[in-house]
Length: 104
Image (cartoon, rainbow, N blue to C red; front, side, top):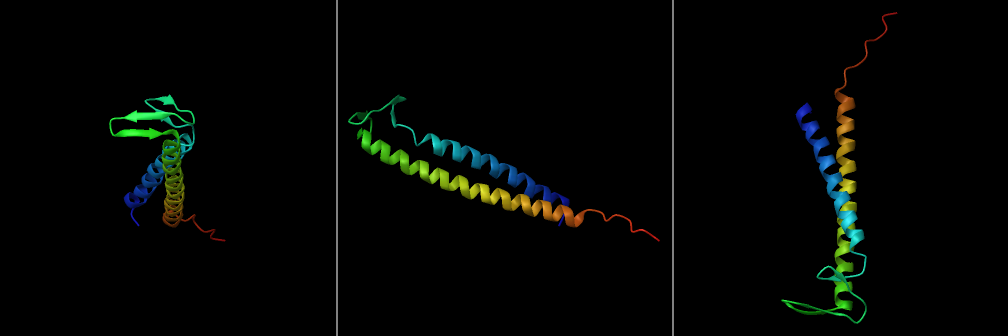
């Protein structure tokens, strides 16, 4: 394996790790109270949008689903990042120069 391909794995691992962090943080943020026009909603509230009205319960259910999906995708990205990092380290060890043997 060439050095360039191995560095590509390292770059991919870093990029996936960043994506995972963003997905997990935003997924956790989705678990908070739903908002309407950046104002926290309370049970029984109605949010009027250009596409129609949405109740607190509908917003809560939608944001909960989105948060779970984001957390799941973040977990998959963590696993993918760990695999790429493992492949990078394995190939780096394989291509490392061997220490000279003792002539005695």
